[in-house]
Length: 422
Image 1 (cartoon, rainbow, N blue to C red):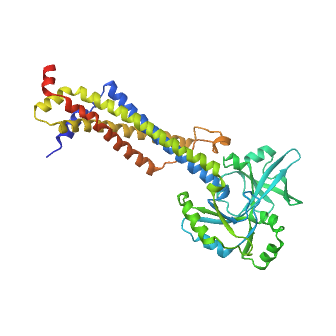
Image 2: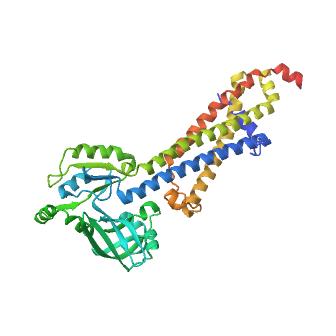
Image 3: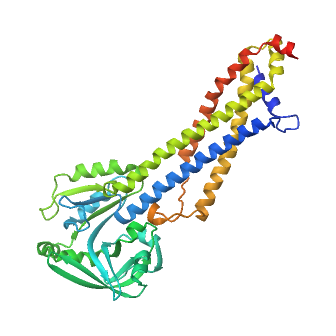
């Protein structure tokens, strides 16, 4: 038997020319509230996911997702050197979800010119993907005496590409000076880290820690497969597998000594290295939950209002249908279907406006931010389709459930009273 309730609902919603009948101000306000609610929820999800992924990518660009360092590290950038072998690096690359493995060296120091000085950390690496993507001037270092400097640091020191700069490093009571040539300038937009790191080839930074460990230097000379580094960086193809991969590497290396037999390995994640940043990002999740709950309440209130207006507007029809033998369930379904059409339109236009606004920001970076406060120079946007689809389904389900209670008004309408009123 055809769904007569749905046919009647369509007839009530659309005229014979296909135009909408629901033009009363209260219904239009309900529709507008639904559109705004869905739009705000979609934009909120896109921005929050964008913030979390963008900031996490930048933090990982400077320190990777996982680091394998000496157990004796003191939570500074002057890490205890360890020996790593090619076989260790190969075993780390074999883990699932590992995208890249790269030894690194960090060494705190100070840059000095005739007019200024600036504290920094020299980082030596041979993995250049992140800095190549954020290079704004010059080129990547190709020689041992070349370095990358951040735009923030270059402006503070009044330095440019091709200029020389003196760097000083302290080892116990020994102070060593190195002259570097600036080969390029990078700008990640993460002011807190841009103002800290000077980037060099791995071999340049290795020389600064080798002199501290003569036994290492001799061992490395005898075995070219060994490297003296501050640690090993491990980058993943998806941050969702961070804890799982870190645990697997930890249990594989715990209680193991490095190649010289003196130092135990220690595994740390980028969340452990940057707890303040990720605590701030976690707070955004709570904000999203609050905003979504508020918008669902607003959308639900507007849909309930619209349904009540449609029921009151159709009192005569309800009385007529009941007089012809229709039961309460039949009549209730008519108005629930009619309200569902309104919900569908609100969700459709909410998605169009929400995704449209997100796309404008994604491609134009129209809305700026203060990088020193928010770690990015513009509002970042990511289209998390799984979350967007789940949000739409949740909105539809909750809206339809909310409609069940006000639709009970239909059961209180008596055909006799309607006819008497008419």
